[in-house]
Length: 87
Image (cartoon, rainbow, N blue to C red; front, top):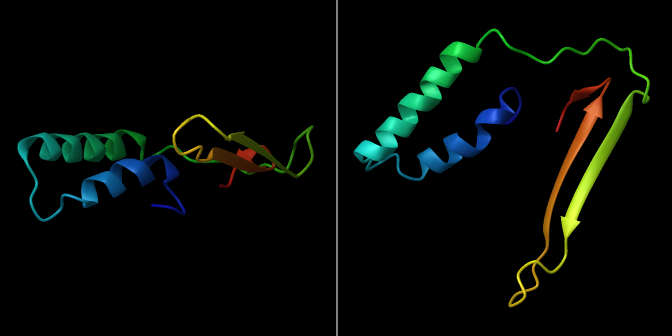
């Protein structure tokens, strides 16, 4: 999932926490993930080699002090190869 279906990384990791004792709510969430897989199986990322921004680029966003008590860092990033996300 982390190499080919990044869109499923969070829901599957969340559901895996309750794999030994699933409630009805989590079973419903698991069924939604399976339905999502069914209807998106033909979608994919295309690397065509044509881009106006160069072959490789990345973006980063960080918030250094959103939580005033802990002042912990929250960050996110995305990198593109030929206009398609790779991480």
